[in-house]
Amino acid sequence: MSESGTDYGGRGTRDASIVNPRGGGRLRAAHRTGGPAPQVADAPFLEGRAMTGGYGKGPDILHDCTVSVNAGEIAVIVGPNGAGKSTAMKAIFGMLDLREGAVILDGRDITALSPQDRVAAGMGFVPQTSNIFTSLSVEENLEMGAFIRRDDIRPTMEQVYDLFPILREKRRQMAGELSGGQRQQVAVGRALMTRPKVLMLDEPTAGVSPIVMDELFDRIIEVARTGLPVLMVEQNARQALEIADRGYVLVQGRNGFSGTGQELLADPEVRKSFLGG
Image 1 (cartoon, rainbow, N blue to C red):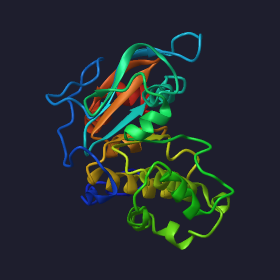
Image 2 (cartoon, rainbow, N blue to C red):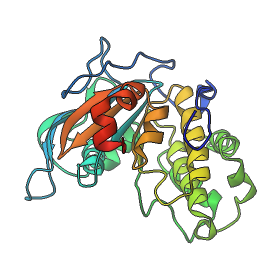
Image 3 (cartoon, rainbow, N blue to C red):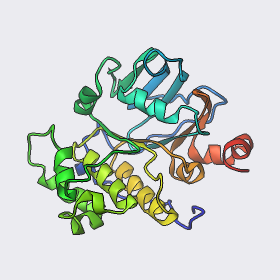
């Protein structure tokens, strides 16, 4: 049960039709380690491996940082401000060049691919800001999300509307007129319109109320239960770890702590240093 009263134990459905993962189902989460990222017997579906790099010719922000997620899992990246959380996400999406390390998607090294090519390879990325077209309607935003597809997108759009019923109700409304939580639903829905292999979310609950945060987390759980891996950066660390199969605490661009969400929540040092006791 979360502090806001939501029980996250019933982890959604398993309708995999909205996504195109390699395979559904839950894989076991890693055990906690003191520093390096968790290791599992099966290769992760998505892995940013030993990433070192920064922006342009500036100093390194990430230092030998590793994060990963398996099919059907929710993996969250948390840590203090300036820890490199969003930078790690952007590195995985190809928005900065790595000086060392690699990004592996479904067994394929995609380190050299541009962000556009990573979308085509199966990445669905929702940035923290500027993630919708405010001058377009909700439905037009979803249509824009399917720009790389050449098949019939209507079944996927219906599935997005089933996941976010308020978007069906407001499908003709300009997205710029929506509340913050509804805009985030549009952004996630637009990413799902590509039928991605993995969904990446950069602080999806930033600026929303606790009630809206719980609703968004519920929908994220439903998405993961289809078999789609979900990797997200989240500022609400305690609530995010409650729904996480695995978590990564970054400290100054390095892996500080990692393990299952429940292990990190129970870790005295993590609680004291990053969760307020």
